[in-house]
Length: 311
Image (tube, rainbow, N blue to C red; front, top):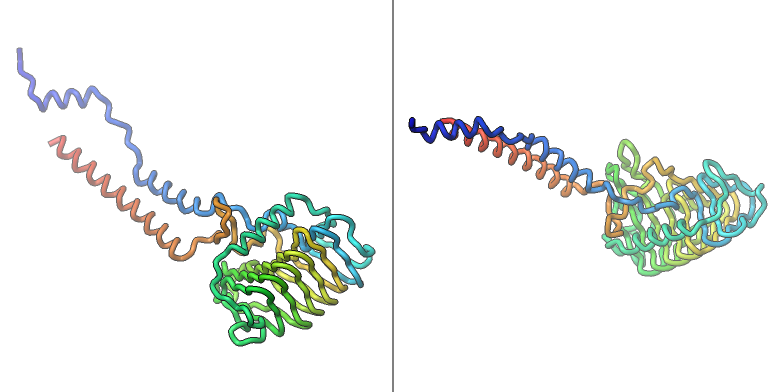
């Protein structure tokens, strides 16, 4: 019988057994990296939840005195609106009854904002007046008890499209007559106007003709002086009442306009940014290219092994 060489035998076996199916390793790893990037925010829930459609929402009665008040978005209350319909106008929404899910989402957002780690404590300073509290860059600002706005507070976005300001106020928030909040150095798309949150522990009192910006989440009652307005946000309370003095305006930011200001709840119900921070983005990009480089080295190793086997 003719002897069969080991090389001939190996060749016969390899010819009889079909080669394993090749997987496009680079493509698979690239898709995995992309999924990781998208997964960073894919399961996030907007911080405002079902309350986002409101221009003004109360967990009790809304009393509207005087005339000329306008609410853009839904006007919500538990019970009737106190005051004749001729006193106010609702646009881009309707007068609705505040629901249990609305109150649940309010409480979740309220507590989530309160739990955020402050970047500065402004207790004792008067917003818009005291040095160190007249112009504020994006951050989380805490007041241990009361807070007051007098004059003009400037929010400097520093050109960031995902700029966020959170004000954590322990008890009462009061604004003086004619006080205001303005933006500067907005990004080209101006989405930073959606990222202002006022988390107020108890009562919120607006002086006449106050021009506030942002989402106000009040712990108990609201009182709006004549001509006081809120723009780029809304006034919300889960269980308290709301009283309007007349000629008040609430202009909410529509849900499809980035109303959350980049703040979302992550999988652990912790408030986080919907947009990865620069360091996080850098790590994701580095990881992506690292996977691609690893795939290239694997292909090179497979090619070398193939050449060695056929030698």
